[in-house]
Length: 455
Image 1 (cartoon, rainbow, N blue to C red):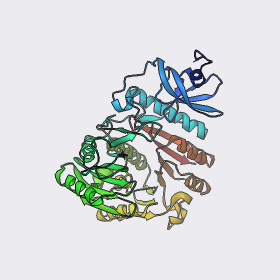
Image 2: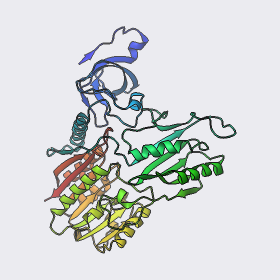
Image 3: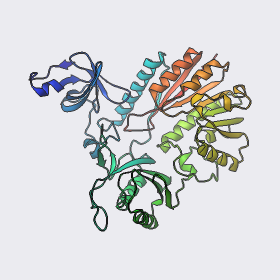
Image 4: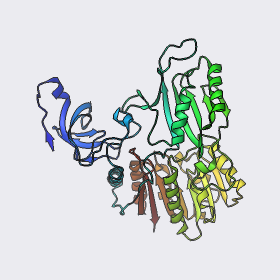
């Protein structure tokens, strides 16, 4: 449904229209059509909303709009619990509806994206919501931004902002309590803020290191003029804080640490072997411990259905999936592009006595075959867990090979998964199972598990 804006001859009328939202796109924006037929994407809108929008971007075939006024709210719209969301924080996209409706919208949009790109008829997907929709994030990146003069002691109090970008900009919303971050991370953020007086713009990663503490990585975006004062303030903070285990300060040509900058492997891996050594920060980890457990257990169940599984895992990381399979597989080879991460996984496997495990470092952007000593035929299961851009080259290589094992594909981007499924289906692979895991409540993202076989 569309309505013409009033006062069409005014300047405002040239940039505003009234639309009713029809559906939600995979990226979380509501979708409608403008008077001229173009599609318009409207963030923070819901199906059923009638809204007056301000057009902020116009292209030949589509436009983007911002809500100027809600004329008639969707029946699914609620008042956002998060005050920062109401102030424009772009860290989350779904506080304006119930969590149950969010999961439904995201899974529907993900299915539509996969179908549109792959051309496949999908099996009915299984949908797994998160056990909790707030307080779940174990790793958060805060943005520190300030542009002020210093006095004798430090920066003027209250001039800096430590939080997240405003939606659609690089302005920062100062966030003292993020509703989706774990309580430990919020506590660390607020203790840390007072110790940043000698640091200007920076990206700051706060990551839980065990159940009640976290480590902090500060990446300064410009040289620190008073670096000794900055280090002294951070050292004192770590000494006095019960929740900050360690801090690492990274500049362009230097890296300095205070305290214990280590992560308990039990926090990174779904099933870490007993006595696994601690890991340094920076390794990939899923941000939601509870949903990661559910996802990995599901992968484990799928692999366990294969008789005498010999597993090849591509993009294996530090072994989040691999080590959960240690007691059910005959062998496992993991290939990971980052040699630092591969060494960490190898150390864990050796320490646990997993002689049937091996990890190889290799650039997977051009395929995987060159990293296999005895070829693909020694495996009957392939686990794929690529980064957001997916694995098109690997899928093309699989199509070219006469291999008929099972593929277990974990994806964090439905569009890229759709593209890769199209490649595989054209090569004779059949999609047997599809599951969605809401790893990222209140955001647009969703994790997908696809199982494929080839006759």
